[in-house]
Structure formats: C-alpha cells, structure tokens
Length: 131
Image (cartoon, rainbow, N blue to C red):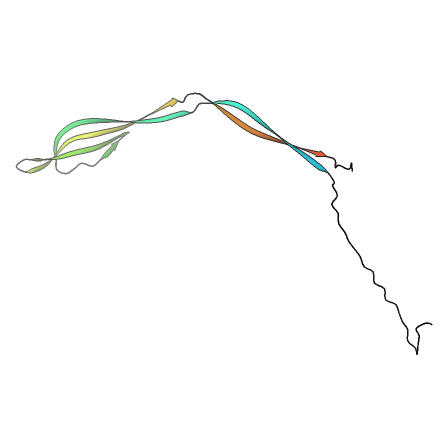
C-alpha cells in the first residue's frame, strides 16, 4: 500500500461543512380599511340651580350669652348680637338671619351632538407571486 512504511497506516479524515442562507419570501398580504360612522343625537340634561334667601327677623331680646348658630330644616339661623350700654352690660339679640337654600331643576336647551365611531375591516390578499 501506498504510504505504508514500516507498519504505518495513513487514514484520511473527511469533514463536512454546512452553509445556511436565508431569504425573505412573501407568504401573504393584508389590506386594512377603516370606516368612520357619524350619527346625530339630541341630548338634554337637567341643570340644578341653588338660590339663597336671606330673611332678616328682628328679635330685640336681651340674652345673657351669644346664641349659637343653628339649623332648622333647610334654614340656617345665624344670630346677630349687639352690645348696648345700660347701667349694666347685657346682650341684646338684635336679629337672626334665616338662610334657606332653595333648589330647582330646569331643562337645558336642546343640543345636537355628533358622535363618531370607527369600524376596521381586515382582508387577506394573496402574495404578488401568486403563491
């Protein structure tokens, strides 16, 4: 055998190599469309309004100490005192403020409002090369 000298054996060693390449292939397409829908609606909301009525009530009564502010139903009563000079000093309840809250509800004017909503459609389209 060739290459055999003095009991030597030559064994060829073979190695395989792999080369990998990638390419982009179009497999499909999509078409997206969007529609905008509009609709007119009429809205009318109740509006709340509060008014304060102040009523002055003369009391002209002597008191020994200032009365406290108090609540009677919807009415807040705020005492107004005045010191008057007499031989002795006394508290005279001069008047009370009666504050009443009155609530009323009225309809707002009619208003036209435009509301929009969007609708999306997705459609599958074949690739350009027909696959």
